[in-house]
Image 1 (cartoon, rainbow, N blue to C red):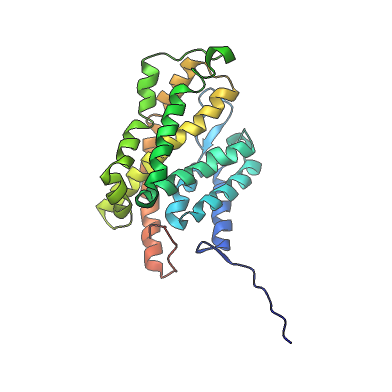
Image 2 (image 1 turned 45 degrees about the vertical axis):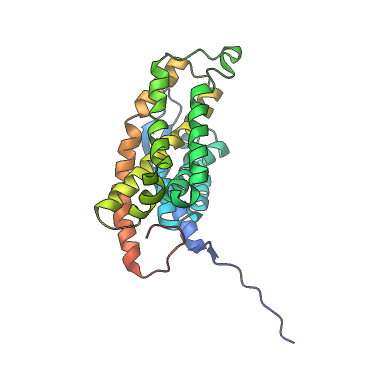
Length: 257
C-alpha cells in the first residue's frame, strides 16, 4: 500500500515563497539607506518604506507578508530605522503595504478604506494633545495651524477614495498602460502614504512626549516629502510592472500587472 506524500506549499496566494523571501530581503537591506531623518532626532525613515509600498502592486495582498518579513530583517540589520523594534516592523514596513493594498483595490475594499481614512484623521486631530491631553503632560499644538496642516494628511485623500473616481476609475487606471497608469499609481500611492503617515507619527509623539509645537513642525516637514516620495515610487514601479506584464509569468491575484 503506497504511502501518501504531503508536498509543502510553494505559494502564498499565488506568490512563490521564494519571491516573498527575496523581496523581504530587499526591504531588509534597503532599511540601511536613510531617506529622511526623524524630526527631533533618534532615527531615520529608510528607503525600505518605498519598497514596502511597492510590494502590493507587484505581489498583491501577499506583499503585506513580504513587507513584514523585510521589516523583521531590517530591525536587526538597521536598528536606527526601527528604534521601536517590533512595533516599528509594523509601523514602518508593514503598514505602508496595508494602506496600498486597500487603495489599489479600492473598488473591492472601499468599505474598509473609507472608515479607516476617517478614523486616522480623527485620531490625528485628537491624540495625544486633546486626549489624554494636558492630564498626561501634552501641551496643546498651535491652532488653527495644526488642524489645517493635519487636514492635508487625510481630507483630500478621503475625498478621492470616497468618490466614484477613487472607487471605480483609479484601480482600473492603475492597471492600464500609458499616462492613465501613471496617474492611477501616483494617486493611489500618494493617498496611501499620506494617511499611513498618521499611525506612523502618533506612537512616536506619545512615547517620546512630543510637545504640540514639535508635532506641528513634523507635519510641516513631511508635508512635501510624502508627495515627492510617491512620485519617485511611481517612476520606479511602472517599468517594473511593464516588465512583469511582458514576462509571461503567472499573474498574481490583485497585483496590477
